[in-house]
Image (cartoon, rainbow, N blue to C red; front, side, top):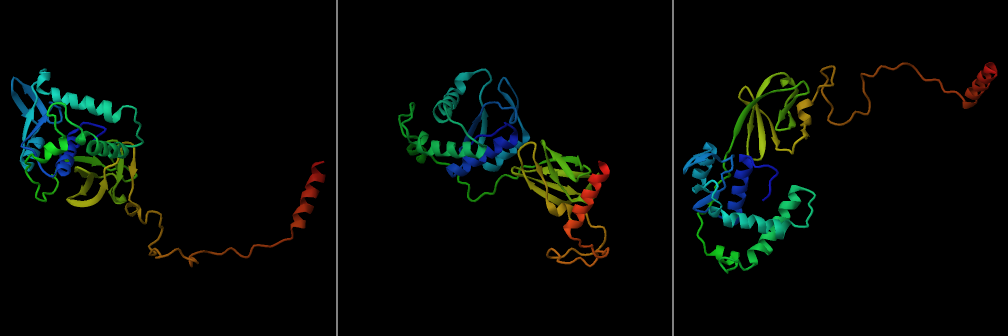
Length: 260
């Protein structure tokens, strides 16, 4: 899978999608000191991001970070990156991230997994089928959550990561709690869930019409189930006079003579 950024949530989502694709978890996962997961790494002493440590414990794998400035510890990883760039992506154009990821999945399963690997001299799909993975056993996705507070703007929208999401209009001006999950946001006010929105790309606005219901009503009359054919509150102003169009032509001619 390809992602537009390298934040912790993208790394966790990538891990989980790999586990689901292969149907299990490896004993060890090797990472390249990405700041989202490895806070510090000096002389063999590694400080992992606590969320990543919890994630590894949840799935039961051992995280292992490459030694800094030691390319021989990750040479095969770098070779794999070059192989993807030169074979899967070179000369290709994609109209969306979904399009890119669909192609990467097709390429991996029909081309990369079926070739004879240059190091093992085996077909990767055949070799991988012989490996033993820790089964997922129907395990639900990792419940990762990042909590923050936001002030609701006057238009009942909350700004989160470059996009805006609606909450019930009566919360405008108040402070709400945003809980960021792997694929969506939940917004809470005084301990009560008031909104849930799927994650959007940057510079998007996600509005739930129900959050603005009734704002334009000036009385307490219940909304009709269907558009009304006649509004009993309408006040008539008499009958509009109907004249022959020739009358207007006469007035136009008279106005032309006066102007001359």
